[in-house]
Amino acid sequence: MLATSLPAQAPDGIVIDTQNASIEAYVASHVGYSERPLGIAKPANQDDIERLIGWANQHKIGLVPVSSSGGPRRRADTALSVPAVVVDLSTMDRLIHAEGRDSIALIEPGMTFPAFDRALASHGLRSIKPLMPRSNKSVLASFLEREPTLSPNDHWDTTDPLAALSIVFGSGEPFRTGGASLPGTLEENLKRGNRQMMASGPLVTDYGRVLCGSQGTLGIVTWGSVYCERIPECEQAFLYGANDFSPLAELSRQLALHQLGAQFFVLNRTQFLAAMCDSTATFEQLFAECTPGDTLSPWLLYVNLTASDHLPEQKMQWQTETLWELAEQAGARLIPSKDGLTAAMLSQRLHQPPLDYYKDTPRGRHKEVFCLTQLDKVQAMLDAVSPLTTPDSLGGIRLGVYVQPTIQGVSCHLEFCLFHDASEERQAVQRVKELHVALSGEKGFFSRPYDEWAKTAFENDTGIVPYLRTVKEMFDPNGILNPGKLCF
Image 1 (cartoon, rainbow, N blue to C red):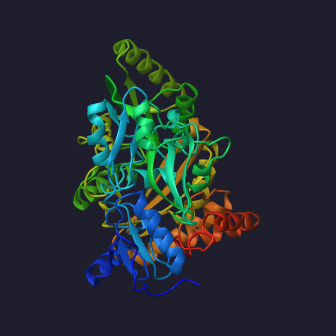
Image 2: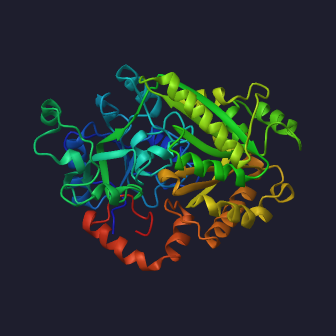
Image 3: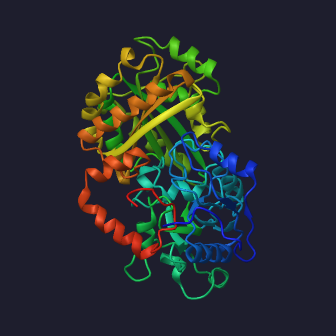
């Protein structure tokens, strides 16, 4: 049983903020319900985190790690299930090291995507991103949660682009994985020229993989290495459209097969408009102007071709010609510019996402449900949820769909996003539940189960639960880390 109040003595050298304003701000950063924190601690380094975890084990105090600075926090993974101390890592935001030759960087958990790109620019690099992350989103948190990135041809493993990690487990034991596990301190290894490029290890262990997707229930990452993308010599973006999903699924498959395109993904028209708009008024205007036969197709595939400094013109030429051939064979048509909604504009927004999170721009709020599947099964899933997504059943809610191929196109991320306003909150919550049930019935794999999704995910695979609880007991024997999440 965890304590429900703080002991008189705080950990040495660490201040736990118990001011009402700080606690209320954290609760308010969550869209859903959260218990009030006992306090908020802001460690400055790994030593602070080790002392904090040791103190929490001694006094049976729950700890909830967060690394993104502020909200809105919509997925409930950092909403407190019981009173606990919030471990705010957002001030641990250094770029420790970057290597342009190896396209890898070493960062702390508070580093956000905009700050990361600014720091990488002088090394000729830019970050590998998910689809337009919010401006205060932690890079390491995004990759630890396995959010899909836009670069399926560079996605070889579920943990990519994450590599080595430095972790303090819930037991209080510090541990370094992969290339970070070489003897000596981090500073000594960097001075020797060693790079933290390997994810698995030491030996055949892969505790980094165990930690991914655990929502802060097993350990706290103090720094990690991530692979980056070299800033290309030249690049060109294209939009292809179709009246239904199938031609674009085939084109996506061919892009993966031919290793063509630095980034590519599929959106329905509503999700595309959401990604392109900076205000509700603009979104609603463009949404209303889209009619049957409009040049902006119901389904759109974005692909970005890049070329390095080795014969970039020749490379871009053969890539472009191959893309045109593949698109023609798949039955996808090139989309011309419409009201300034060009592939180049989308490309700019992908590399420099707006300050306001794009999913909240169309209607002020959003709900989402997503799973993993395969490209050839997406159409069956779209058919299965179609009774839930008709204009009559949605009312004023706008439905966006995002399909992101992953792991060389072997699998894909399928996401439904419900853009809504305050008056449609209850309807949107109910519709998400129904979508989750429908996707689960079509064998969608919920590898990132949040809040109520976790109940269904673990009910569908009860055999795995005892093993997961054994893992929890190994790494967090007193159950202090993010209690009440997943099946813990």
